[in-house]
Structure formats: C-alpha cells, structure tokens
Amino acid sequence: MIPKHIFEAGITENAYLGKGGKQVNNLLDKELMAKKVAKYDPMAEALAQQWIERVTGVNFRDPFTVMIKDGQVLCQLANAIKPGIIKKVSDTTVKFKQMENI
Image (cartoon, rainbow, N blue to C red; front, top):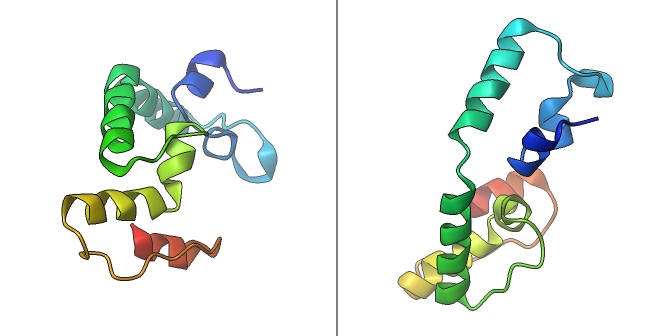
C-alpha cells in the first residue's frame, strides 16, 4: 500500500513499488523517493493546471500527471501559444509515440 503523502504527491504505484509489485526497501531508492516527494509542490501543480486549462480550453478530468503523461495536452498547449508549431499529435497508447508528443 502506498503511504498517503506519496499518493498525494502524484507518485504512481509503479514508481513507488519495485519489480514484481514489492515495496522497495533499498536505502538509495528510499532516499531518491524522499527527494522526489520533497520537491513536489501541490500549489505549483494547481497553478500550472489552471494555466494550461485556460490557454488550451481543456478541462482536466483526471489528475494532472495523468493528463500530461501522453503529451497530447502539451502539444495542444504549444499549438495554442504558437499555432501550427506541432504538426502531428499522436493519440496512440504506444509509449514511443507518446514520447514523440513530449
């Protein structure tokens, strides 16, 4: 089970748990996770989300990290700022195509 503060920081279960779904007990991994959690700023995320929603007209129906993960919203943002800058936006679930969006 993911501790509440880790979940609220937007860190996914896969990132928190190691291979095979077992909790990471490695000291270095725990230190890196603690650093990641410490850097998370929910206010900055909320402000960024509001700005992206305002500029693009997209209403976030899922958490921020889920909405920007595939890069489609980021492409829409870029095109809203400078129309036509992103010629093709991939809407597939194939990871390398999503990375092309980013």
